[in-house]
Image (tube, rainbow, N blue to C red; front, side, top):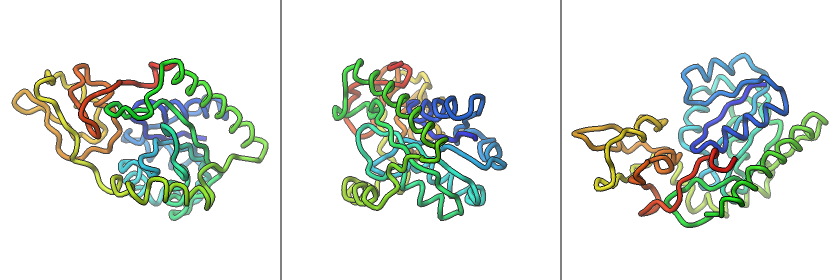
Amino acid sequence: MTGLYFSGTGNSKYAVETFLQEYEPGAVAHSIEEKEAAGAVENQEELVVAYPVQYSSIPKIMWDFVEQNRELWQGKRIFIIATMGLFSGDGAGVLARLLKKYGAEIIGGLHLKMPDSIADEKALKRPLEENRALVFQAKEKIKIAVHNIKCGNPPQEGLGMLSRMAGLFGQRLYFGHKTWHYTDKLKINREKCVGCGTCIRLCPMDNLSRKDGTIHSAGKCTMCYRCVNECPKQAVTLLGKRVVEQGRIEKYM
């Protein structure tokens, strides 16, 4: 088995790597940002795929990767992991339906509640110890899922019709359009920004660049929140007006 993931602040990467450690020690996980990602999974029969849900949907960058490599999924047996701050309904189901469209067989799905990565909003902010507990609980849930898969009873979280209705009416019907296109809402506070280039280096979309000593956005943000969480001057925001709390998975381990 091979892992494939998109991860903003490390939650989904952690989930895939933990899954592979339990399922097939030595198996490798690849970020979809790697140039060789598609080739690395081309000859694999089984995959585990993980990503953070956004508004009960798929990040635009993950959707594009699946579409651009549509020939890749025929005949693949795929287990899907969806990471989230609280709830998504059918987070795993959205990707499952897209992959099935291109001939994949979906083994099962797993939803993992993880530390919230939306650094510029107060919602879902938790104490440090509570976030650490979430990471530990996710690890234990992954272990149980792997055991059940090997016993022929893989979890099916997010894949049923009830989950689909929950995802649709819970979020996607009202906010799902925000993931249809890349966003131009990323904001750089010119007074705080020192032009260090951290955000440029981290951006998976090459959306950010330096011009005349300041950082500019090209309007092609996939809302991964890396730059917001790692800007040393807290100069970057997306949904909110100021950074409330920055965080990456390493903070909670």
